[in-house]
Length: 625
Image (cartoon, rainbow, N blue to C red; front, top):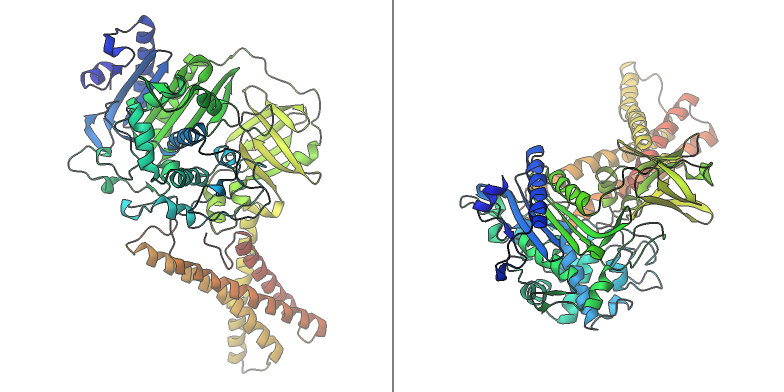
C-alpha cells in the first residue's frame, strides 16, 4: 500500500505539534519517505498482510499503517485504529507498571517478592529469595514453563491468579545465577501488581497507564472485537492463540498508542502533561540491571540491551501466531521505534522495517577490519562440544521433550587451526576471537559470547543472554535416535522371535522344551516390552480423547488424569529391572544355551536403553507441571 493511499485512508499522521498546526519539516518528510519505502518493500517481499509503524525522533512523531487489517482485506491499516497483537512486547507495559510500583515506594525491587504476592506459594528451594529485580532481568532461576501460557479459545482464559498458581515451575538454580527468558517471570510480576494494588492487572493498567497516556485502543482483554474488523468473520474463527498470562503476551494495541508509550519512555515519563513515571524512574528502568559479563549486552529493567557500534539500544520483541512486533528505545538520542506486522511471514516483514530504521538511527560501521586471533584459546579442548538450551536441559517436566525437539537448534563448538572459535547453529556458522579467558567477540559483528565453569569444568555457553548447557555425546538427539532405532529392532527380535521359536518347536513335535527359568524370564521381559507398546497405545488414545473434548488443548492445559498415562512405562521400567535379574541369574548358573543367554541379555539391554530414554525426557512417573 503506498504512502498516498494510506494517507487517503486516514492511516498516517504526523503527531508532533498537531494542535498548533505543525507542518512537516524536511527531516520529517525524509523520515516518512524512509518508513514508507521500507514498509512497502517489506510487504512486497514477504507474505504479510499489514504493518503499523511508529517512530519518535525527539519532538517528531510519525505513525502510519500499511496494507490491510487482520483477516480484513478491504480494511486498510490505520495506525490510530487498527488493532494488532504484540506478543511479548506486552511485557514492556508490565515492566513499566512494575517500575511505577517502585517509583511510588510500594515495592522494593530488592526485597523478596513473596512479601507481596498472596496468590502464589513460591517454592523455597534456595536460601536466596526471588526479588522483582530477578523477575525483571529473567534471572529468578525458574525452569521454562509452556503449559498454561495460552489456550485456543478465549472462554478458557483463566484469572491471572489461577494461571500463575497452577503448574508453578520448579526453581532449578539460585536467583541471579543465570539468565533464562520465561513468560512466567512477567506473569508473576503482573500478579504481584494485582496483589499490591488489590485490583486486577488489566484494570490497573488501564487506569494508570493507558488512561493517562491516551492509549485509548489498548487492552489486555483476550479477544477484543476490533481485532478482526470484517463483519463476516469472528475472532474465534481465525485466531487459535489466546494468552493465559496476559502480562507476558496478552496486549492488543495500535501503532499510535505505542507511539505514546515510546514518548513516555523518552520524555521522562510524561506525555501531553500526564505523568506515569518520574524522570528518575525512567532512567532507572533504562539503566543496566544485569549482565553476565561487562563485555556482554545485558538487561535493563525488563528490556534487553543491544549494542550497535557504540549505540546502546534497549528493546523487546514479541511474536504470537501470525503477528510479530518490536519495541526499541535509543535513550541517549531520544529515539524510539515500534513496528508490528501480521501474516504468515510477519516476523520477516517486521524485521525488514526495523533493520531499515536502525540503519538510519544506529548505523553499523561496515569498514571495521575482521578480527584475527593471536593464538589458541585458553582451555580450547574443553570448550569443544555440543551445547543445548537450558530451556531443555533444566526442565523437570514432560515439556522437556517438546523444548528439546521444537525450540531451537543446539550450538556446536570447535576451535579452528588458526585459533578461531567456530560455532555452528543450524545453518548459521559464526567465528569468534578470544579477548580474555573464556570470553569471545565476533570477528565481524558487535556481539560477544562467554563460557561459564563450575567445579573447574566448562558447563555453559552464554550467547548474549541465551544460555546453553554442555551435553554429553549420548545426550545428542542424533545419537539417541540411533540408540532408539537399534534398541527397538533388538526388542522386536524378542517380541517376535520368542513366540516364533516356540511355534517352530511345536511344529517340529516339541523335541526340546526350554528351561522353566528361561520361559519365566522371557515372560518378564515380554511384560517389559508390553509396557512400551501399551504406553504408545494409551498415549495416542488419551491424546485423541482429549483433542475431541471441549476443553483447552492437551499441551496448553492437560487434564489432571492425563499424568496417569505415564504410570504405564514406569511399571514397565520396574519390570525390566526384574528381567535384568533373570539375565544375571542365567549367566551365573550357565543353565541356558549360550546363544539364548546372549540374545536374552541383548533384549533386556535394549529395553533398558528405551526406558532410559523415557527417563531422560521425563516421561516416567511424569510431573505434568
